[in-house]
Amino acid sequence: MEITYNTTLLELEDMPLDVGYASERVDIKSSTGETFRIGGQNGSTQLIITLPFIDDNCIAQLKEMDSLLTINALGGITKALVVATDKNAMPLLEEWLEGFDYDEAFGDYYGVRLSNKELAKSLFIISKDGAVFYHEILNDLNDPFSLDKALVKIAAAQSCYTGKGCHG
Image (cartoon, rainbow, N blue to C red; front, side, top):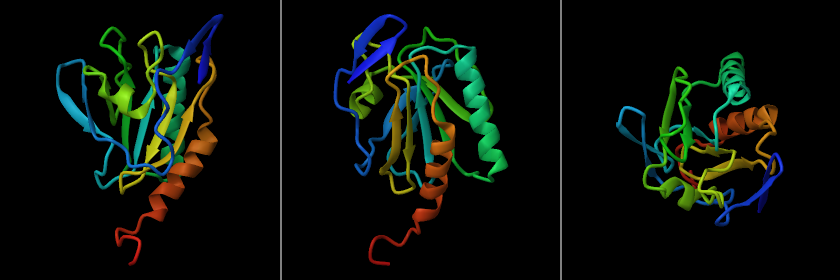
């Protein structure tokens, strides 16, 4: 998959983890050195956003996502922001896990590592059972995420899992 940033053409190093597949639980490290796990089955819907860089537009979109989640009463979601390295200054958003892919496991498992070793601009929704419910990987790093679509998918992921398995 080709990804554009201004006039530069980049490529994903691997195929992205597709919808319906089990997500991998990976460790991410915060700027304070604390390690936390994201992905996999953790009993809550997860919103995981990866960024190759953090600028004012990205921060504004993350804050808009928070507002939309609140307005639509979509709570109980684990929200994580992941970058490739600790060279990015994190925006310190409330109720977000923020960290870097210190061992490159996230980029490898989810297939979002770019040819320049940064992570693609991507959004993953992981359902309560740990499956990839939705993902958006932007072809242009300057484009915004489709927040309205993500919101619909988060609501669907929240309501589809009953905890009773497929025969319950």
